[in-house]
Image (cartoon, rainbow, N blue to C red; front, side):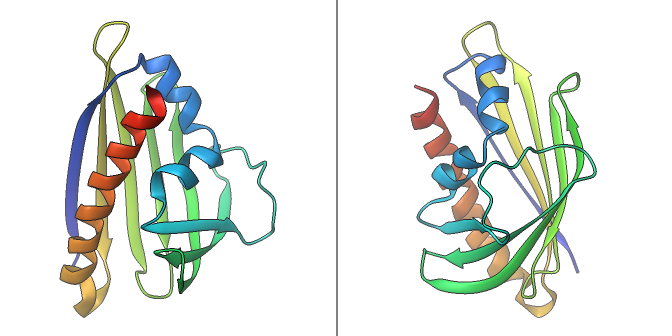
Length: 147
């Protein structure tokens, strides 16, 4: 049975700066470390996030534990609605659907929200616990990146 976790923060940057950073693989790699390492399975670091694209990453937890290939299918990457939605998964967590929503708060701040649907069978509760810590960590790192 799937569960949904939600984490939101106010970032110290305008929505344009946040949106620009969201488009870079290097931003994902920075905010995920050291909880998770995403290495493109095809070796290319110049990927462009866009609707309909499918990306595969070698996923390592804490930089060490191989978690297999993590697939990200971009369903929505919409600048107008400030929304990104992806269907993701890997051999251990087949459902990891992730929505990122942005809301401008004046010119120098942005409300950022992660919503993640997780289904890992009997492991779901454990994965959700890790995910709560992971997304809190990611948002702390986002704040550092945007200062």
